[in-house]
Length: 107
Length: 125
Image 1 (spheres, chains in turn cyan, blue):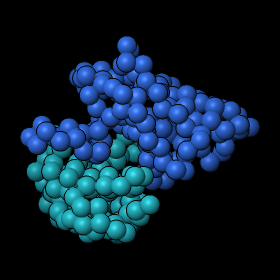
Image 2 (cartoon, rainbow over the protein chains, first blue to last red; image 1 turned 135 degrees about the vertical axis):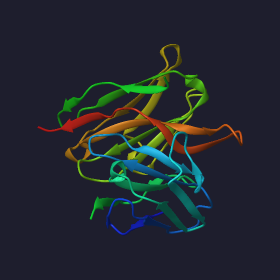
Image 3 (cartoon, chains in turn orange, yellow; image 1 turned 30 degrees about the vertical axis):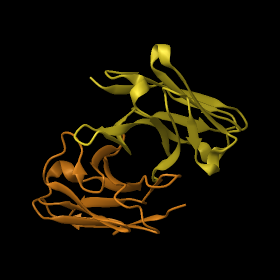
Image 4 (cartoon, rainbow over the protein chains, first blue to last red; image 1 turned 180 degrees about the vertical axis):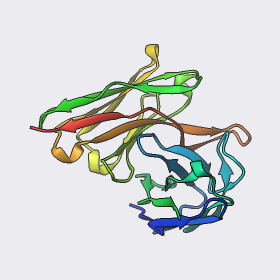
């Protein structure tokens, strides 16, 4: 099973600042990597798939990069609605696995 | 609009089974794989398995092999996930989720673009 490790566990950022979230895979997942945003009481929302392709309706301030084992989600200028938990997910190998999440909180 | 609507909350005793439904609307049900993901309170996301609604083919995470069964009824565009031999550790919100189709490349991705609202399953004596 591929283990996905996200860092940091918590990120404190001021509105308008840039946020950089990391995700590392225990073995290569090629570009088969997705990012999700989850707010309390809601289902996850797909942000990025294929490591760098924004899902439909996702604002351009969200961008993804990386391949192989190292991936990054960048939020260029945090808006109030962006404070949430973010998960990465690999879908290169079964079982598909998620990272433990990064909570982005208001500084 | 495209949506997945799940059945309501369940309370079960240890050892019992639960069957959660996931009704699709707004798209062709048989064209997209359905996956099931669960989340215990305050915890992360855990993938349970997938089903191809067209063929009925399934794939389960080894952790759930022998306890989970994913089925569908194409006439009513509904997928089902049944989990048996429930224990307290199975208490969680269960989500169905649709795989993504990239219209530009023509490829499917096992990233999940449409999610159900979640079904809370509580296992307690």
